[in-house]
Every structure is written in C-alpha cells, then in structure tokens.
Image 1 (tube, rainbow, N blue to C red):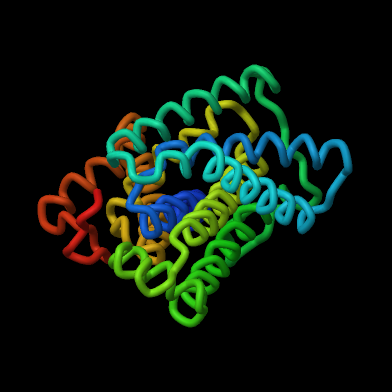
Image 2: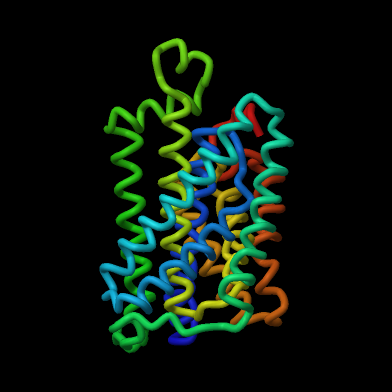
Length: 290
C-alpha cells in the first residue's frame, strides 16, 4: 500500500508540471482557437534562461520563480507580436504549422547557445526531503503542486470575475461579436500568449530544478498535450486537473506495468476518452475553430 501511495504522490508532482503546461495550451486555444505546438519548447527556453540568470545572480527560490514567470511572459509577448500577429486572418492550419516551425527553431536555439550537455539547476532548499506521513517528497515537488493550485485559483478568478477575463471568454465564444462590442482581440491574444508562456516557463523551470536541466525538457509539452485533450481545449481549469490525473496514471503504469508503457499511457487514455467525449471531459460540445 505504501508503494501505491508513493507512486500517487510523486505522480501528483510531475502531474502538476503537466497541468501548468496543459493550462497554457488551453489559455492560447481559448483566446485564439490555435494549438501552439511550441509550448514545451518555450518552457525549455525559459528554463535555460532562468538557470543562466539564477547562476549569475544567485537568486533564491522565490526570485527564481518570479524570474521564470517574467522570462516566459516576455518570450510569449515577443512570439505573439513578431510571429503570430502577422498571421492573423490566415488559415488555422498555416498558423499551426508556424508554431511547429517555431518549436524546431527554439530547440536548435537552445542547443546552439547552451549546448546539449545536461546541467544541475540548483535552487536553495529545493532538494530538501519533507516527510509527509512516511512519504518522502522533495520541497520542489511540493512547491510545484502548491503553485499549480494557486494558478488554478488565480485563473478561475481571472476568467470569472475580471473584466479582461470576461473579454477573453467573449472572444473565445464569438470573436466577431466580441469585436463589434469593442473588445480588442489583439490585446486579448497578447495577454493570452504572455500568461500561457508564463505558465509554460514555470513548468519548465520546475522540471529543471526537480529532474535536471537538459534539451529534452521540451518533451513536457508532448506529455501535457494529452491532459489538454482530456480536459478539453476550451477548459483551462479542466486541463489543469487532467494534468494531475495524467501524472498519477503514468506513475502507476510505470510502477506496476512494463516501463515502456508509461510513455504512451496518456495517449492511450485520450484515445479511449475521445471515443466517448470528443470535446474532452470538461470541454464544451461546440469547438468550431479547431
């Protein structure tokens, strides 16, 4: 039983990272109707940049988190302004292919600047073992779970009660009508890209601190994608909770079944779910702009 609990608890930690990235997928889709396949790479670039800043300045844990959010948000704004905004009005497939190209460029950029060798992203206190009823977890793992819960609460309040959040929901529901009502879709999309990239940057930095910094960090985007599909592309909060579920599922499969099945567990799950609910567990039936 203890082994099962250990798998579940450690699965929640990696699931929280998946949840942050899944939220970032959903935020961009909700505001633009586009799936950004470069989310994992943006998290990776943010992780490397944050590591360089932390190494140079010796920032503490809180400062490292703030730096990661700021770097991620800035990267999102740059990509939105220079790459995505000129694509407004273009066919959805063309825009999606641009994000695929962006992903390839960012991977090459990271390898070119920092090399392919792995690094240790040392943050004071992150590796401290905390005993939770006989289950040992690193402080970094506990922190990322708490950060995800804070992000869920923050986005719930933002989307439900803030003026800009309501505008984002209006754009997601009917972009043309929102424009007629005076909503600036360009501003909404810029904020969506900044906030989504900030989430992806947090995920990348936490992954680097807990599991190590390497160019393969971009794979968190691939692992988180099933969570977004499972939760629903138009459900930010559903995607977050689905990330936790995918993380626990992967750990349980890896713990009790052949380890090779761990890598495909999330994708097998979404195949089953999509046959029953094509719009995801928490998504709305109508998804017109996929």
